Length: 127
Image (tube, rainbow, N blue to C red; front, top):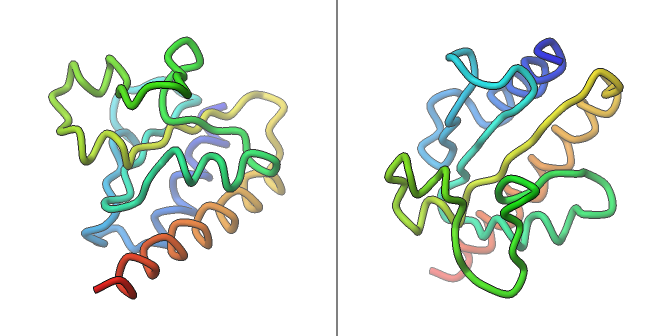
């Protein structure tokens, strides 16, 4: 699982450039769950991103026990690390499993990259 998580991490880093100010990777090679990746895409609405891709990529804005579609609350984990609300609402959580294939990872990288860039470009167009 760590291998697939690392492939996802590296693929997204390559797409957004490690130093892109719009992307914050909360865990990558540091101590974290071997199958989980948390990313913040500054300025996007993570729930909109999840809704846009929900039929093609399985991911969330928090843990499964936290998913709350009726309220605008943020994950207790993100609250605990002191993440400001604006960044927390732009954070997604991705998990891999022993059944996750390289093709699925590669497809997720493409879909997430395109959807995030679409949201970011619509923000730029508004200004």
